[in-house]
Length: 333
Image (tube, rainbow, N blue to C red; front, side):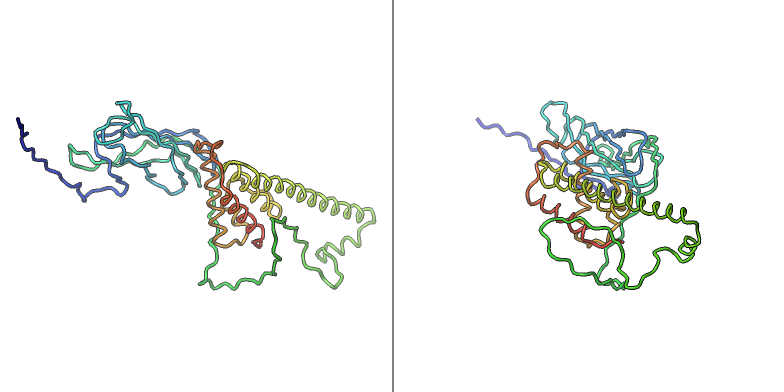
């Protein structure tokens, strides 16, 4: 016996183009959206841990990381995603009821008064309209000065004539930069301004010796500080060479760059990539490589990545070493 089912006609309508939000990723259904962040007080450059929650019914597999509604003054990173379906099978397909979460760090680059606001858009098949939901702007205190963008590397069209740099012999490893003691002069002359120099000549002998001792102590302290920084840098370079996972390698690399910059520029913020990279005239490739290292380090430290199992390859380690070496050999600004 043959049984024939009645023919069902299905009217499939394309999603309307009119009114489609820019951040629409294909989510269709009924959803609710919320976001929470901690802590409520940070400094510029410190991350706020955001948790985005989307719950409802629909095709969760088409829901990607919601974007910032106003991205100015924020730096976002890749989120750790999670999904819990009511059927317990983890199916994110059409018609599924459940909850999808996104955990990610967001770093303020300027002072802010509220938590970052995220937007999520979906299509409601009942009303046949697009809906955009935004998270509530919860209070947040951000202290500190704004992060200044690193200067862009010189291009071929630049009108500035670069200063010829002396040739540097090829090296097999990263060398520490010696402090610049200035150009040698064939003529004898005082290292102080004429007014100070001649005032010292006219001062009593004990004052002259006291001044000389003060200058010597200040010079000794400066040299001792530079020597301590070089020892610290050597330790960081050793960690870059020997650490097993990416988080430790990238963390040591960022600290090594900071130490190299501090040897000649004084104290600089640990995580201020713009200030650190801007302390030297680095080429575009080095700036790109170091920028990626800074970003990867922040993600691994704050995004909840599995640090113990995230081993680094020899190729990636060599790339990190080359970027640090290029930074060290670049001239100071």
